[in-house]
Length: 339
Ligand SMILES: N[C@@H](CCC(=O)N[C@@H](CS)C(=O)NCC(=O)O)C(=O)O
Image (cartoon, rainbow, N blue to C red; front, top):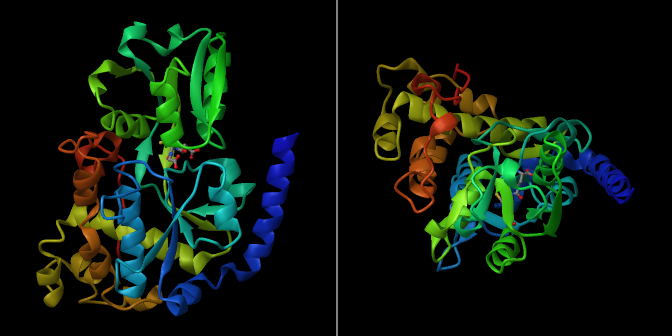
C-alpha cells in the first residue's frame, strides 16, 4: 500500500517536471554546469577520490556529457542519490540526468515516466557470501538472511528467485551500499545481493576479499544505463548520442590518445569524419558544436578506455568485458551509425 502511495506521488511530480523538461539543454547551458545524479558511493562506478573529486565509470559518462554540451568535463555538480531518492531527484528537476547503476525496466520507463537513453553496462544480479559459510549455490540459501538495498530491482528479483525455487529468506533492508557492506561484514546477514558489478566493486574494498565468494547464479538481467525525464527528447538525444559516440569511438579506433590528431583534418574514414565533425553537420543537428564528440571522447577516453581505467581486469574490481564487449568481439555493444 505504502508503495502505491509513493509511486503515485512520484508520478505527480513527474508530470509537473514534464512541463519544464524540454528546457533541459537550455538550463544546462545557461547554468554552465550539469547536475548529474550518481550513487552515494560505489568504487569504480561513482565515488569521490582522496581529493574529493568524483571518479568512476558512471561519473565518466556525466563528464562526457558535460564536455559535449559545455566543452568542459569538470563542469559537473555530482548529486549523490540512493536507490530510493534517485527517481524523485530526476523527476523534480534536481538533476538533469541520472547515471547510477540503474536498471532499465518497463515500469521505470512507462509508470515513473523516464527515458533510458542507452545501456552503459549489461549486468545481472548475484549473491556474495562469506567463504566460511560453505555455500556454493544460491539455491542453498534456504532460510538465509539477505542484505538488500531498498528501492531497487534487486529487492524484487530476490523475492522472485526465492519464490520460484520454493525457498525462504529474510530480507535485511538497507539504504546504501556503504551500509550494506558494513552490515554484511558485521554478520548482520548471511548473504549480500546486488548487481554482480556492484558485488565485485564492494568486495574489492574488503580487507580480505578472498574470504568472500560470489555465487555462480546470475538471477536477472540488469541493463544499466543513463536516464532523463520523459518528454525531454532533445536532451535525451544528447545523452544517448554521447554514450553512442564513446562506444562508436572504441569500435572505430578513436581514443583519447589520437582524437585531437584525427580531428585536426578529415581523414579517409567518412564515419570517423562525421563523428568528429570534420565532415557533415551532426553537431548542428543535435544542437551542439561540431566538435561535441571530440570533446566527449577527450574527456576520459572512449568506452573501452573508460571501462579499463575504472572497472576493468587491471583494476582491483577486475571485471571482464563479457557482454560489454563490442559486437565485433562477440559482445552486445552496438552503436547505431553516425550518419
Ligand atoms: N540496478 C539496480 C540496483 C541499483 C543499486 O542500488 N546498486 C547499488 C549496488 S550495485 C548501488 O549502486 N549502491 C550505491 C549507493 O548505495 O549509493 C536498480 O537499478 O535498482
